[in-house]
Length: 488
Image (tube, rainbow, N blue to C red; front, top):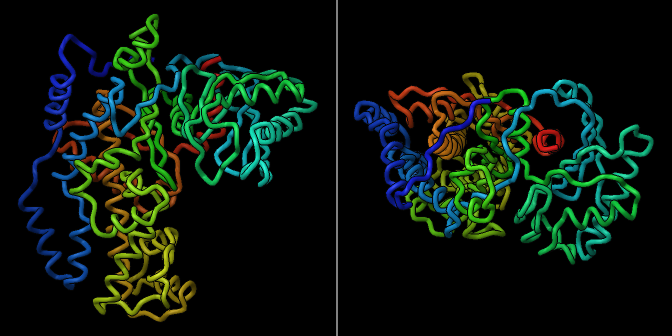
């Protein structure tokens, strides 16, 4: 595959290089069209005041997207350099290589919650020709209050059961470990902190691959971890096996994150720690971009509104993941609920039998249903309101609810497109690249990809670009096995 050619490090200092790239970004930004703006304002004037106020709060105009781009570019450079940054820019140690001729059996472990999966992939000429998978539920005693031996012992026993009778039980293994970890090599990952209700003792600060290897030995499993990774890296590798122009792996679901290929010479913190590294090699970077501008809010203070502030305050990670809270399905329903609550107070709608006053009273799947294609009477929304909330509604009320849901979805898509567009520009491949995306929001929210493409049109303006958004499934499972194949 052709080598990526992003901005290379020179003798210039960091601020100079950042400013040069920001100027290049500004050249891609389409200026505000006063005619279009006047049309938007005229359309808004026809709405009731309460709806106009909500529309204003949820609107993400081009100049705010431009501010986000400029802020993110600077944070990316700082993160790659090892300076304090709101995006961690973590080297994955998964490098870009030819996938030709990959044939054989590969295994994958996918641990992201109380359920975990074991997969076996059979590859022939780099194509997955057969897959076998099993799901196991981790006993609660190993998740809450248990210890490392219990948790990883259960995983090892499950793997031993899965491979029993297999003709190949020592194949390369990819391990998706969807918890915050620090990596010092391809097959090591030190847990920084537990999330998702896990409190298992004796794991934080330890290498999870070493803990697993210890239990594998006890169970007679002749297998070691080839690569440990997260789901965004797996998503990118999954698409890369099909399309060597795949540049980004993205999750837009209950969370939001991006991974992308970066030249090793553009990762100063990695080069300092690995003196013999090839600067012309290309490595996948896990950005952890859902935390962009958190908690500093140097840019997001211009994007956040009273609904976002309330959602953040009620979250278990207040002040963190502020960009993710604008995009992900975990929060879109709550943002819509708070806006609809204001419509009720203004007398525009009559309420949903108290659900607008309850946390999680308007889930994201209801929001998604309210933006589906519908007839002139909005019968689908009428059915949701009657079946799920037991309320009758007028056409005017249904139209108001639909507009609010559309605005929440639109802003989510524009924020996601802004982040992705910035990363593509940083890599220097806006003229031809594939963006692999997994996640329920991208897959199941009506018109979400279309809204992202429209945002790209705003961002790039008259500048030519060719960014393809493709749905890429199961990066956390199949992607782990393919990463093991790539790196073995």
